[in-house]
Image (cartoon, rainbow, N blue to C red; front, top):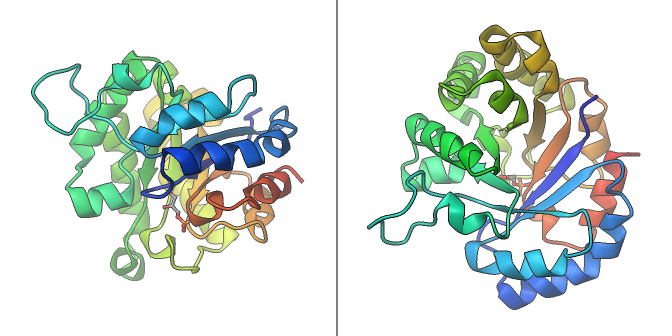
Length: 252
Ligand code: 13P
């Protein structure tokens, strides 16, 4: 059985002080749900220590939104896996905003996945098609290729421990979400079946898949009812106190 997993991606929101205050506000409500659902906040780098401190003594997880794949070196502005591990259990890799604004490639995402796993971090690997691709009917081919590239060279055990977040780009921050049926179908054919083809049924059954894109307290239950959807990667709605309600609705 796959344990549901709801992660908040704060993107470039919340300072150190705001992060600590917010987590203190929602901590008790979320902790009460952690027997049924894994919960984590993926915060901006400098807010991560505040989140890590605020969740101490709870089962709430902490994640980063990116990292670099090299161990260390002259890479101005970058953060390594070893720098994250004192604070984080998770790291988001290949978010569409990083692919779109910062030139991230499938190859880079794959290198980051290897580096994250080598340091004991769980990658939350993001995949998803643009509106143009969606309308051109190439979603399954495009997303399948992203999944295959991201997992290249990982063992079955490593792949099973990853989380893959399917986030159609046209549904991010737009209020337009993919229907639960459509998301479930794409996640089945373009993600879980691809993992099955690469690693076999056992790995495909074990890997957790999240949906992302305009997830709210009012629609999370529809997604969670789908067999291929094990959780959500939540942007805007993870910045508000009613994120607790969203997580509660996720486990009904
Ligand atoms: P929204 O929930 O704000 O649409 O963002 C989704 C997302 O990009 C999470 O990574």
